Image 1 (cartoon, rainbow, N blue to C red):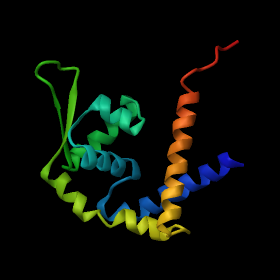
Image 2: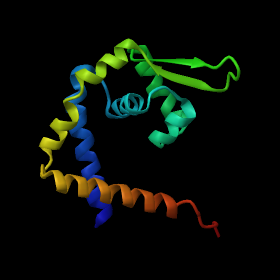
Image 3: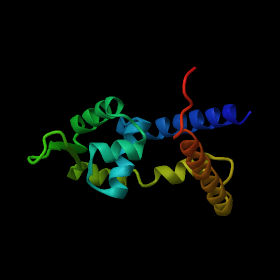
Image 4: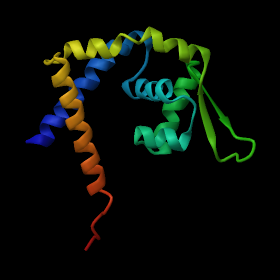
Length: 143
């Protein structure tokens, strides 16, 4: 079944990241937040939540722990206190180079290391997620 294979692959991936990130006391979801900030820069919480596909109730504790660790800062906008901007600190920016080896290590742990296979897998997974997200846009009425 596809669902079980995806579930198993996701758990194995998270386990690999957890082991590799342990020296920095980062969880896999915290690492993903950092990756979004490294790639896209400063974000408001709404945009970050959309990028991470997390609601604010799940995202806020992640950000709180990363802020406590000194990797990011959260600030409310003066013009609209409802908007919280998330910015990397110097320590958060420096962490990117410290963890630059992590994706390569995870890839080496995977069965396939062929560049083309990896690109095809990534493309297939992205297409699958897009299709599933699109189909979930129209939720059936409960009877």
